[in-house]
Length: 132
Image 1 (tube, one colour):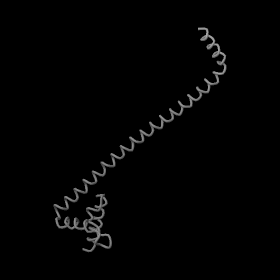
Image 2 (cartoon, helix red, strand yellow):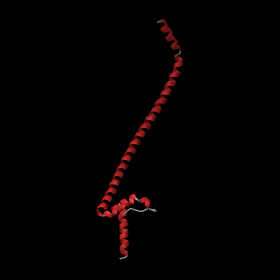
Image 3 (cartoon, one colour):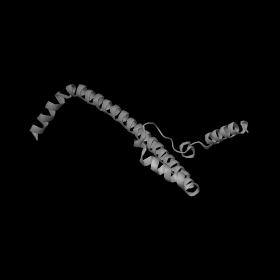
Image 4 (cartoon, one colour):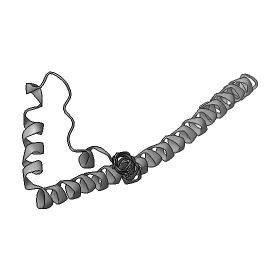
């Protein structure tokens, strides 16, 4: 018991040296907490960015699916109404490498904007009427 008291006295003598150590540890702890807060903020920002990009990816995927459906509908209409033209388009797609220059598919399949397609047909219709 006496030794314990002697040990306690020795540690109390070093108490004056402990305050600077406590201050240094407190300062390091604050710095680490600040870094942690910054990292957590960055993580939250990255999670929001990830969610935004995933929503955008989903939207683009849906747009591609709608576009593919539209193209399939166009091809189905072509197949139903103009069977020979449809077969020619299929042949052209499988034999593009046989041509030296670019060969276009029927304009109904090429143009994706129907307003633009309508303007093209109207232009050609008006051009044909001038010669009549």
